[in-house]
Amino acid sequence: MQALNLPPFDYKVTNSGGNILIWDVLRRKHVVLTPEEWVRQHVVHYLTGHLGYPLGLLSLERGHAYNQRRKRTDLCAYDAHGRPLLLVECKAPSVPITAAVAMQAATYNQTIGAPLLLLTNGLEHYCWRVDFENRTNKRLSEVPPYGTVG
Image (cartoon, rainbow, N blue to C red; front, side, top):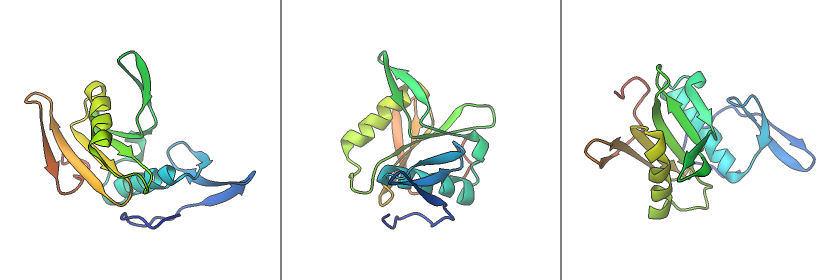
């Protein structure tokens, strides 16, 4: 897999039926190691290992409804009260982070309501603080550590 612009982590891979699988600490099972999954696993370990996000407050690929359609978020971090804190949209490293990707994540976040939004392909990362009341977004230079967002 491609080296990413995220800290390395101690991962476990195995081979099964011709597929390379990676151990997912959130789902507690091996999952197919796609380029997007490689990015998602790096983000999970970065949030928990470097920014203090509790593993138990992260959710992968949780379903939600938008315009009567079922959608799935890549990753969502919650605060201690179970409120969405950070919505993450992961793409494969070969997929550029474009305005269309940002619009997809912002659209999902209209129903989720997380005050932080992170878009990443593992090489480029864009994080915003979302102010729903004033309908504005502020670009951040980095993802805030857990406990610093209120």
